[in-house]
Amino acid sequence: MDTVVSVKNLVKKYKNHAAVDDLSFSVKKGEILGLLGPNGSGKTTTINCILSLLDFDSGDI
Image (tube, rainbow, N blue to C red):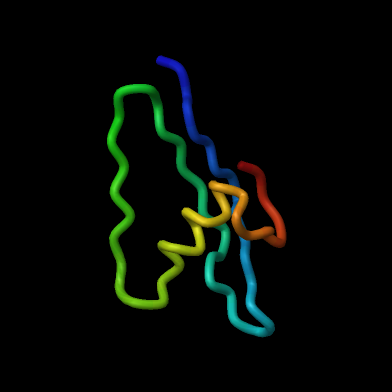
């Protein structure tokens, strides 16, 4: 299947706090992905980086 989203070693920091630290995953065509976690765990930050609404510090999307 074709990969539609690929995130490799994503890192996004705010000052001294790592909102996302070394996150990797891929989503293939037809798959459904859910991001689950407590408040402040980086879910929205991850989506914003994927959508190019936020610049990330390192990694590849």
